[in-house]
Amino acid sequence: MIEFYELLKKQKKYVIGLMSGTSVDGIDAALVEITGHGLETVVNLIAFETFPFPPGVPQRILALCQPDTSRVDDICEMNFYIGHLFAEAAKHILQKNGIHAGDIDLIGSHGQTIHHLPLFTEPQGKSQIREKVAHNEVEGGWTERHVNPKTYLTEPQGKIKMPSTLQIGEPAVIAHETGIPTIADFRVADMAAGGQGAPLVSYPDYLLFHSSVKTVGLLNIGGIANLTVLPANGAFDSVSAADTGPGNMCIDAAVSEITDGRERYDKAGHRAARGTPYRPLIDEWLQHPFFQLTPPKTTGREMFGYTFAMECLSACRQHNLADNDVIATLTELTVQTVALYISQFATEQNPIDILYVSGGGVHNQTIMRRLNEVLVNTTVEPVDNSGISADAKEAIAFAILANESLHGQAGNLPSATGASVRKILGKFVCP
Picture 1 (cartoon, rainbow, N blue to C red):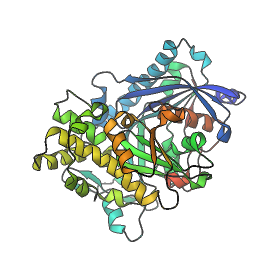
Picture 2 (cartoon, rainbow, N blue to C red; picture 1 turned 90 degrees about the vertical axis):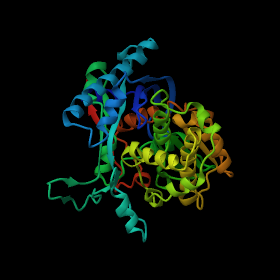
Picture 3 (tube, rainbow, N blue to C red; picture 1 turned 120 degrees about the vertical axis):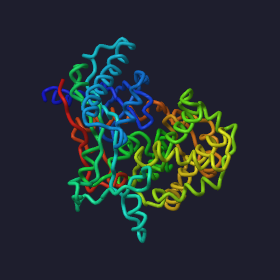
């Protein structure tokens, strides 16, 4: 552990943040200069790049995400292979910018989530909703999954059902191939303490964006959309955060299906702009029990992935919607789930003055236009306007979390994740 001890002496560190999200687009690599830690943190982005996965890899990852298509040997192998690809991304960004690996102090790697089974809170008087959401939506209906970590139930088949999460991208491979100390697998410590394991970006959001005069919202629209709310002049325990529902995931799946794989996403939201949303279906989808749950709450491909997207597409076809109308309808669903969450949980006590948007969704002009139209009392802007890159923000967040863990600082916010205590996050691996 001498590598980590030596780093504590340095006021300024050079850290690489590595991130791959639920959209499985590729690996985001952010090289940052970090000065200080905690509330004294100052971050300067030196370089950022997204490295697409090699052909066929996204499909292999997505196969691992589904119980009926995943195999333990594939998970085992891909854990190391994805670690190799993360290491290659880190080395490539250094080479491209003429920087030697020996000049880098630390890597913070999120990894690639392949399954996320969070603990759901029980809204007052809504136990039936909790019971329903405690089951994963799969073809053929709901499949049982127990969610109370204090009462582990063993089924007749011997399966134990409990909250859990799994990210692959072996950090030992990253550390070995780069020669750089690596901290990874951040979510599990929060979940071990009864949290959702997400959104973990809420703590970096607080360090970078909290204001004494404005309530700031940070909306990241990846495959799933998540929102952090930082009340004006608020402390750590005032922060709230949750996943709001599907981000780009359903839109991407529908575009791929409609175009027979020729297109993977709605570039700049042009298809949605040419279509007309069908509001009756949106209203029907908004009755999904996830949207009735109180925060903290998280979700993922298990609930709003391919199966859900295909059910939505089928419903659109039953109503004879044209292709662009389908995309417009799913795009509007993302907008409306964000607006619904804000109206339910983020307006009465702390109306959001400014909403900074990041993630792939920030490039969807239809989403950005509609958010501005729907959130009439809130200024909606790309987070780039604050000086932080919208594309790099999540990778930067995991560089910050690695730096916080190095200094023995907790990186989760129980008010955001639902954990019982604050925890130092991640697993430390020496090169």
